[in-house]
Length: 174
Image (tube, rainbow, N blue to C red; front, side, top):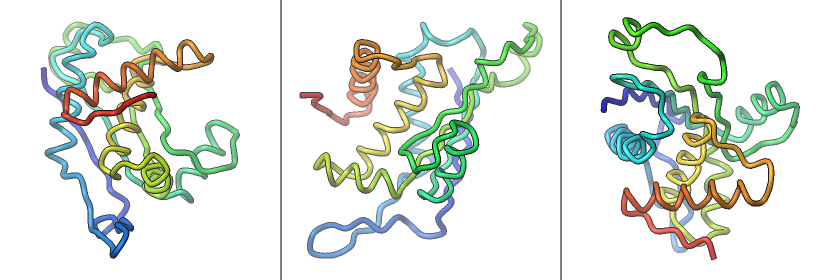
């Protein structure tokens, strides 16, 4: 299975992360993102429409930019941690020839680094772990997962734990 991932990092420098005594620089490489998505899509194959390859956009941004998107598309004028814009929600015609010749575009995931930093500190784990957690959540939304109630939220969170475990990041929901 092939994944074409387009990562747009809206920061010129690696992220500054408060690390107690001093600041630490952190960035997740494009290669790491690609490996994570490849692993995750292998696990999620039953949820995927058949295609030879898939395309996903990932944008790492700040609270101000994600707040604009949240207000515009969700009518919630406040920052959020992750937004997902699924292309599969649209009933687009796709022929077998199209699927064989070009990647199937799954959609875009937007993550606020500002909110991810805060949540990582609150959860007591690294920013890398929080970015993986939020991005996995966004990917599930691209594939049609949703959490309108507590039961579906728990199913989705458990699936995120499985996805992160596959890339050697352990999260305990308790």
